[in-house]
Length: 129
Image: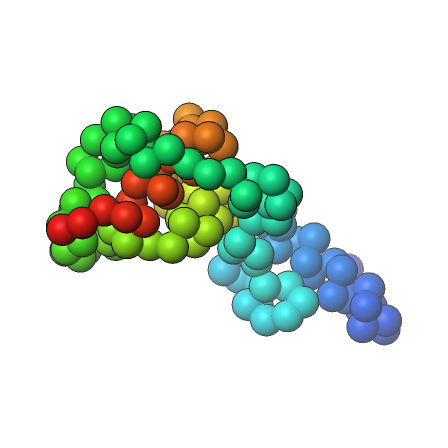
C-alpha cells in the first residue's frame, strides 16, 4: 500500500502524539517535541495546595519504607527522604495517572487518596535521619 504521508507539519505532530499516547511500544516513536511522552501530571491548584498531616503520613509510611530507606540511603531504590512536598505529590500522581511506567509504584499510588499523598509528602519532607 502506498501512502504519500502528511504534508502539514502540525497534522504530523498530532498524529505522532496520538500514536505515542496509545502505543504499546512508545519507545518506537521518537522522544522529541511534540511527541515526547508527558511524565508530570497536570493537577488542579487545590490538590497541590493540600497541607498534609505529617503524623498521618508517618502512620502511612510503613508500606513505603518496605522499599525506600528511612535513612535516605539509595541502594538501587531512590530515596524519598527530604523531598520537597510538591515534587513528591507530582511524582505520586504521575504514577497514579500511569505517566511513569513503574507497575509497583502505579499500584501503590492508585490506592492512595489525595489527602494520603499530601500526608506522606509532609512526612517525608521533614523526616530526620
